[in-house]
Length: 193
Image (cartoon, rainbow, N blue to C red; front, side, top):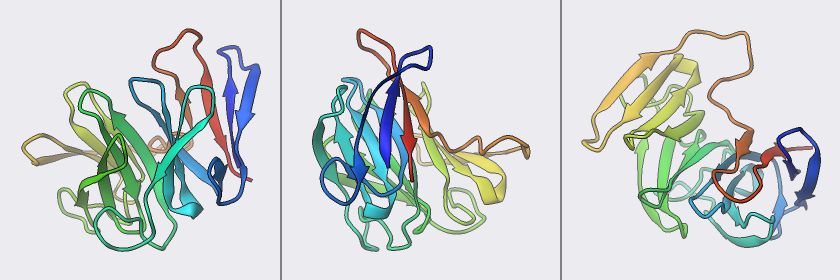
């Protein structure tokens, strides 16, 4: 239950985090995303929270709590993907246990949620799996049980694309992330024991 930082050739530079519930500790880290300042946002699944670190792995702050209210993470412990819209300063977190994608600001203040369980537009069959923000600021949600991706645009309208089954690992779950800027490129990987 740690984060490993490798250089582009695969050499390990350093690691941080241990198993547990304290600051800088993880219980099944899942998703990773960077903001424009190279702060790393880590989905800490079984602790039902997001932890934020600087580029050196130093703990900065955390956000999220257990519950079923908007902005909380469902007690089913199924946090999945995360992405940061650096242009707007928003963080999107997939909570597959509740079926929702939660939107926060960079400080962890809850803004809104969308999704929910179901087969219709804007909903997820079995909960979402990952989230990504494209260059047009559309938010894409991976719906693996529905074999589709869905995009939510600024008008809150939805479009969906059917996904083709793949023999490789899930295309909607990222467990590695490259640093977006900074002096030395690095690749990070979350390890869960």
